Length: 195
Image 1 (cartoon, rainbow, N blue to C red):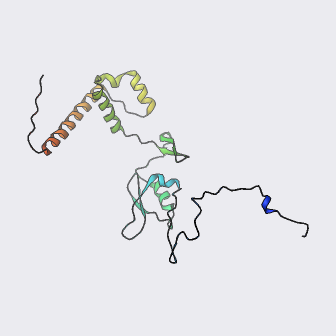
Image 2: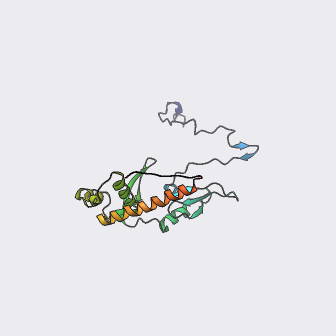
Image 3: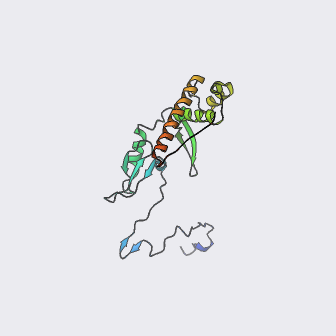
């Protein structure tokens, strides 16, 4: 054993140390009690849940972004209950592989269900028709239909008659909104216009 010598100073292994991550000897100790440090949420589950403020009883809870169910999420409980919920969440449907899209979140690539709301799509098309003074036949243009099919293959395309009824519905909705806004305004308002 006398011939064996280990020189630890010549080791080429170096590990970079981030000074912000290194705790000082007195950090976290206050008169004999340890202060609980907030840890970084690294599980992929946290992209589907919102952390709520501390409850009255002092327990940390979180809420599902899809269905609104509330769960305990303190570090001592782990994330297994959240993972189980994601598998059984009624509002989150990822069974069809055609609905999955690759998304990049915080440097990691994961598969998420695409959220396509047909009603919101119809409102956007109706708003575009009104905003740009397009003909109702715009939704039946071959190029526009091709673009819509490319963006979402399962889209239900609307006809010019449906576009017309959507514009009329939006007109009535905006008319009621403006009427309520004017009713809430104190004083008199006089509107005049020339044809």
